[in-house]
Amino acid sequence: MSATLTGRPPSLEAANVRRQQTAVVRRALRLDRGELARVLADPPECLHRLTLIDVVMLCLASRRTQPRAIALLGRMALRDGVNLLLPVGRASPATRQWLADRVSWTRNGRGLQLVVSDPVAGGEEGT
Image (cartoon, rainbow, N blue to C red; front, side, top):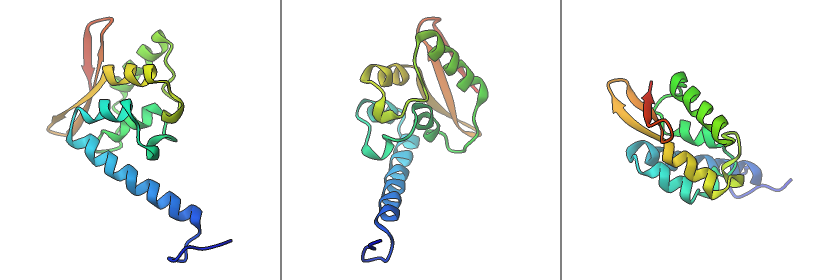
């Protein structure tokens, strides 16, 4: 097993770099509502292993799941034949665009709130 100049194995170095890059993307997602659509249109390498739903969760300030919005998103995905558990790197551009068209967030007194809109039903729901 070879080590880098820091004394860590190369796999650990690569994982640390990926975590740092993901943290930068997470901060950008939380600061700018339009960033999610940009990230889904051209996902950075550090997100390729995350599932689509995990990328949505990166937008939230806490790890609260916001079950009503996630359930609505899941029902819409099922109805439209979209798999939210696909890794971002394997999802087609059309699938990533489907998600970008339906998910956003807004700030409220408790932090960031997930907003899911359904173009078919014409509704919007947050938790």
